[in-house]
Every structure is written in structure tokens, then in C-alpha cells.
Image (cartoon, rainbow, N blue to C red; front, top):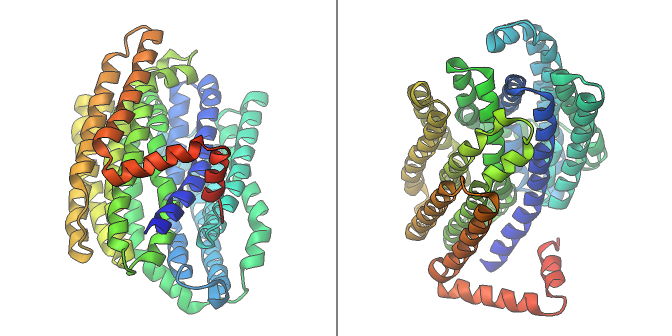
Length: 499
């Protein structure tokens, strides 16, 4: 089990570095966007972003998930190449179909989403970018199958550098506004595909595997409904905010969500990328249940820690990003609540892995659709009354409800005893620490930074003396001793990144 834990943490750490790059790029672009766009224009950009997320997630038909599941069961010489070639052809057909089908609808979407035809010229760029992003899913999934996280983040870093360069140039140098932002993203996706082409050609075997194609669709088909519900669950609030409010409200909420969702990107997404291939290979072997139980506790621990840090220092971060744009400062108040809701998403997501491990993904679809229905109902109920806070409450309550439903069905097909008391202790203690941080936000900046640093230190001490058990304390003690040795840090890093 220890070997699997180390491998999971090693790969999640490397993938996490990639997600750090994603979030760092997003945060680096925020001052550019905020400096060039008012809250209404930024709200329009948020709508374009969530539309991209929805269309890529839905119209990819989760072919990439089928590729991961099918190819992970085979060795490189046992048909992986033809499976990959088949998956790329399927995704290419879907991407071209999406572009051709939606291109004539540009004017319709402009009027439907923005009550104006002024945005119609932006949609052809958006649809082309979506098609390229769908295709770019495949080489990245290939690196996951091959357990090559360093290749994954290297190509991701290249794409993000291109995005930062193109978007900055078109907005700052050429003053192209929203068109420049979307064009920069399009060119970054194109550059990414061209860069990964040699690796794809090297691995692919030019043979269409009909059985593999059917199996990938069979695995991914139930997940289509999951994708629709899950994506709308995470982005639907912005559309409903637009219904009851203004684009400027969407802009403020989008800025807050960008910061608050750091937890989702750096922890949940990183863990997904590193853990799933290992879990698929380890499932059914001796010791798996104990490994799976412990992993939920550690996964929640890391999620809680990052949630606390983001929540405590959200005011300083938002003001640093938008120092000359006070219209965005309300976002600082929203960030802690958004970040905290992702703790429940993390737990629900982990429990849902049982559906993937047992190949019963239809339950995942049912749970996600139920969560989406709950979320939409709560959004339409709470947003008119509580505004942006209602949207956050709807999201958090939806994830909690989904967690209970997921736990019920997962326990029937994969019964495991989790460490719920320890997990509950983490959530309760984190909420108390965040509440204290919110109460001191009106203090002088020096005073509140000192207090927030003290809260962080005390919370780490709490985790060691109260949360950790004897075995974990002993491992921490050995880690501290190793770090004190000459070259100890280099040794640990070499072991972590050893492939």
C-alpha cells in the first residue's frame, strides 16, 4: 500500500505542478483582463469561458475517458497504439462536426446570451477554439495512460505560455478587446496540437479498431449525461445570475470564482489526473480497500489546507489583482464561501470513483443529474433573494446532497468504512479558522496579515497534535529528520520524481 500511496502522491504532485501553471496563467491574465475590461466586458468573457467548458465537456462524448479506461488495461504492445488512433479519429469527427454545426448559429447565440448582435463576430473564433480544444484532450490523455506526468505538464506549460503571450499581445499591444482574448486562446490551442503531433504519430498505430470504438462509446455514453449535469452544475449559476442581474454581476462573481476555484484545480483536478490510472490498476488487489480509505482522509486534508489558505488571504489577493478597479473588490468577500464549497465537491467526487472502478458509471450520471436538478432549483430560489451569496449557497448545498446520494449507492457496490470522524473534524476546524479570518478582514493590513499567519501556524499544529495518529506522527518525524540531513531535500525530491 505504501508504494501505491507514494506513486499516487508523486504523480498527483507532478500533475499538480501543471495545474499550478494553469492557475498561475489565469491569475496572470486577470490583471490584464481587469485592466482592459470593465465588469460587464469581463462578464461576457466569463460567459464565453463557461460556454467553452460546456461544449468541450459534452460534445467530446467522453471519448478521452474511454481511452483511459480501455488503454490502461493493456500494455503498450497489446493494442494501445490502435486504440489511441481510433480515439483520435473519433474525436476528430466530433470536433469537425461541432464546428460545422454551430458556425451558422453565431448570430442566434449572440442575441440569446447577450440580447445583442454585437458579439456575433466572436462566435466563429470561439467554435474553432472549442474544436481544437477537443482534439487537444487526446494527447494529454495519452500521457496519462503512459504515466508520463512530466510530458503532460511540459506540453501544458507550452500551451499556457503561448496563451499568455498571444492574449497579452492582442489585448495590450493591439487593443483588440474580447476578440483578441478569444483569438489568443485559439492560437494557443493550435500551437499545443502542433507541438504534440510528433508524440502522437510515434505512439499511434494506423488501424481503426471497431471493437475499441464501440467499447469507448459504451463506457463514455453514460458519462455524457454526467458531463452535461456536472458542467451545468458548476457553470449554471453564472447564466442564472445573468437572468436576474447584469453582466457586471457575472464579472464580479466570475473573478471571485476564478480565485476560489484554485482548490478545485490544484487539488481535485490534480488528484484525478494522478490517482485514477493507479486506482484502475490497483483495484481488486489485496490491501486496496485500506489504501482507498486512507486516501480519502489525506485527499480531504490537502483540500482543507488549501481552502484555508485561499480563504484567509482572499482579500489581499483580490486587491492585488484589481488594485485600480474597485468594482471588483466585492469578489474578496465571496471567495472564502466559494472555496469552502469545494471541500464537499472533493469528498463527493472521491466517493463517486467507486462507480468508475466497478464500471457502473450510470450511477455517476444519475447522481450528477440529481445534483444538477437540486442546484438549478436552489439557484432559481436563492439568487433572486440573496443575489451572489444565493448562488454560492446553492452550489454548496448541491454538493452536500450529492455526497449523501453518492455514499448511499457507492456503499452498495463497493462497501468501505471511511474515517468520517477525522474528516468531520477537518471540515469543522477549517470552518472555524475561516470565520475568524473573515472577522479580522477590516483590521489594518499589517495586523491582519500577522493574525492570519498565526492562524495558519496554529492550524498546522492542530493537525499534528489532534488530527494525526501515532503512525502518521512517526512518519512526519522521520520526514523531518530526513530533511535535516545534508542533501535530504534533494534526495526526497529525486525519489518523488523518479519515473
